[in-house]
Image 1 (spheres, rainbow, N blue to C red):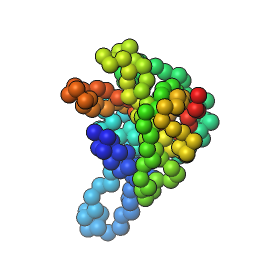
Image 2: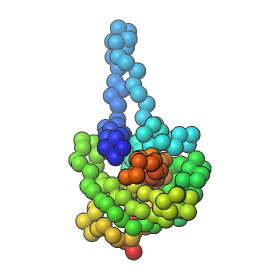
Image 3: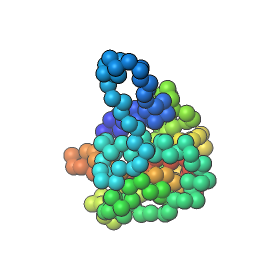
Image 4: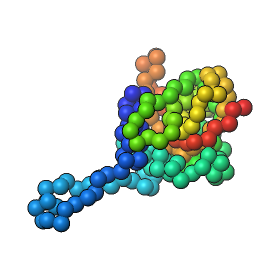
Length: 187
């Protein structure tokens, strides 16, 4: 599931930053030979909570190009993971702040069109709505992680883009939430 998520993120970010080639020739035969260009979404999909299919990662990456870290922080509201898992549709696309303890972080590989440093920071956040008592938050972070380490507690700010399901070690399914942002504060 993680590899699929990273592949979706890299592809989406490349589309967002590189754009589509929409040049067409004036000749009718050239216009017929070219396939229709796929439009890059600019608004969050609020009817599909799955990050694998909602294209919200593309929208969030595009919005980060215009959002400074301080601007995103200022407009983000603190939200509980319980609310995001219980009522995801009312929060899709909204800027949120979540606090959690990091259990893994990893730089993402360089990719053409991706400007800056991108990393995935995985956090565990308490959640009364989860049978496990906690939910994994995947924070796709545009910024420097050199001063961030596992076992630190951070508050991150980013756009809530949806949820994903993955299999746990006991064979059951667990749901995680995903934010894409460019601001974090170590606590």
